[in-house]
Amino acid sequence: MEVPGKLADSSDQDSNLICLPCDRDGLRESVYGFCQDCQEHLCETCFKHHKRSRPSRNHVLLGRDEMPKNQKIDIVGPDDKTDFCANHKDKSLEFYCNKHRKVACYVCVTLEHKLCDVDYIPDISGSVSDEIRNLITEMEYLVNKCKTNMENAKAATHQLDLNYKKVAEDIKLFRKEINDCLDHMEIEVNRKVEALVHTAKLKQENVNVACGEIVEEVNCSQLNLNYLNEENKQNQLFIEMKHVEDRLSVLTCKEKQILEDNELEVDIEFTPNKKIIELLKTENNFGSVSQYGKPSADKAIYVQYKGTVSVKSSSDEKECDVTGLVMISSSQIIVADRINRNIKLIDVEIGALISEITLSSVPNDVISLPQNKLAVALPGEKCIQILSYANTDKSALKWTGREIPLTSMTSQGMNHPSESRS
Image (cartoon, rainbow, N blue to C red; front, top):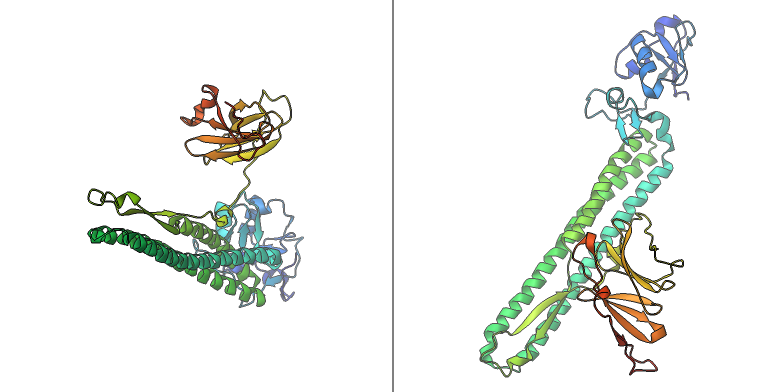
């Protein structure tokens, strides 16, 4: 592809020709040959290096007698010059390594990217419209995500205020039932509530401040990209895009870390001690204060496909039909297989079936219960079967249901409420 430029004077042909790569570095070297692929005249040093460097080793090179006698000299607009290399201060960033996704100068390409697929930035900077749209879309997504986090933080703070008022009212109602000797315990429990609310508000303020900083930085970067794009400064736009891509990845991780570091159970509950009325003189516990969180769909946003795990075992006689699934840990899932009438334990980290147990009838669904127990719906028998599992060692999981009798409960509201099964 021809590089836009000015046509050199054809008089004194060879003496007026200069090495274009050297000319970009401020040097004027006499011409030794010409590259037909790059459409550039080269000095003897650049000519020989052109044959060795991987990006240009297959280019067609012409000697002094065969090369064109006219020359097109690069002219880079004053408003679209590339930045200088951070490692080689006097060298311009003119190349992009597709393997390492980095911009580089001529020296960097020679020393560090000999075996890489390298492009000349002026050749590719004009075709980044789709890429910049995707980058801006990612930036807008992060901004919207942070704004949502800020709105959620404000809503959570408001909810904390409402919870605090409700808890305070519950405490006062309960306090009316007892006498003045409980003043000290009332003060202590209120201090606990206030401490929890204060800590919760600090966390939400942390989210507000940190996400606000991310929004401000991303907005500035977006304005800069839009300006460069509108001004058609393609070289600067390309380089700025790559800088922003790296920074956007950091900010995205930072936003995730902000939510993890400031994760909060937003609801507070006061549980009164009823025994205190009868045992006022011997009981010193006014009540307890606890927090509990509501499930948040936002926590399920960051999902990444990692692969497929087979649930079929060697004992299965038919194809599997999964009718229920529940996670019992970060790496283990329980699967109900209707066709083969069994419950299976799968380790998703190693991608293998650990153990299984065959049921007396077809399972419709399965849920997790406290104390390492499972509830399996058996509609054909009109009952819910309770299973137990042992989690002693990831590599040696065993079902206690294989060694002990499995108990079951009759589902309420069935046609035969008196029926039970062991």
